[in-house]
Image 1: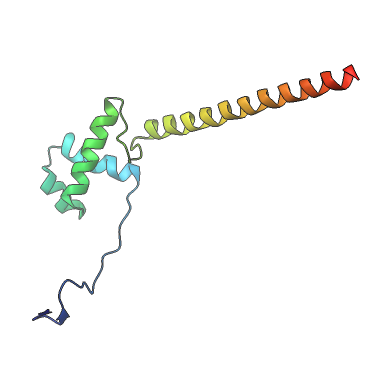
Image 2: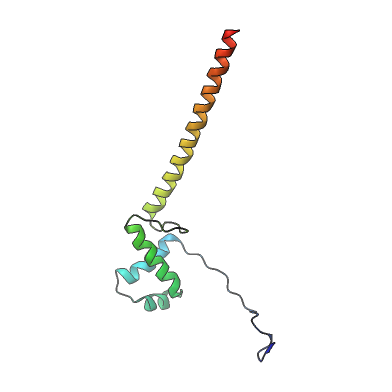
Length: 117
């Protein structure tokens, strides 16, 4: 099927690059709406971002303020980021501790067997 504008239907010639935004930028964008009285549309127009993205960021910040991190998202606030980093570090240290416990038990077992001979 042909379209009247240049050939094939449903083929995009100009694809957009996906932009990424820092957590600080996202928080600042959310504050335009939540603290400075901008509507979502106004804030998006000023910042040149899509409404869907800003609404998602607002929802994420509200969830974080209540102590939740939404699945599939990274924390926005520096405090939430630090908490996540510390939780990951704790997990690694606990795994290391378990490995060391098992290794100690194995070495003690080997030592006991060696002294019995």
